[in-house]
Image 1 (tube, rainbow, N blue to C red):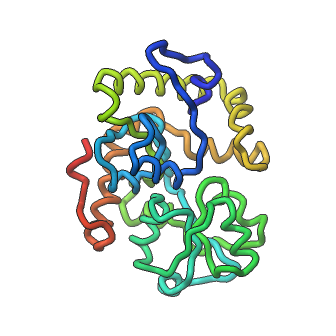
Image 2 (cartoon, one colour; image 1 turned 45 degrees about the vertical axis):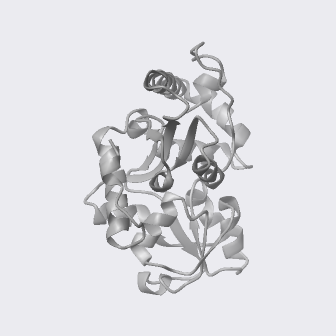
Length: 260
């Protein structure tokens, strides 16, 4: 998404951009402290933020796929609700959707990229995997015991799975600046899509040792039509997630009405 900006092929002299590379749960926590003008966050984390607005571009939605729960053995959904599961952060959208599905299950937070190994080594019975772990878990000899993307698809009659979004600070940026950055960001996304192999070369610098084919597949899954503009479809999915979580008492309030 950022290749156009990072490569200097897409720019706007009104902005001086410093690219911050951190895992999503760290960015969620930094957003809580309002440390960044523009940041990627989990859609779930937006429930706890104030004075940030959702950018319509740059989001990651699963289209009948999403996070998965993995293990060395089979579990029913009922059994998973009483199983200790390693999770990649309690503000991730994967965690919130898993709570909607399973209830308040026992869990332990772990860095997302370590979860397959932790499950394989028997430190926990199951793990909630995001990012490329959704693709590579079989190489650890693990089973997919719950596909939350498919589960969500059935539950919501085909809504996209809301995972990552980008937000801009309404405290430090004017409405005009936010709009200008949105235009710049969308141009960067489109440039990357139109120069995919070059953008993939750039992405490989942050691949955590994964094969090029894995990263290419992952990008192909989550940089899709809703990344360019989430539109009503994307906003509806986010609102649906918050309503379900509110109805189940996972979130203290339903913030759907605050999303415009």
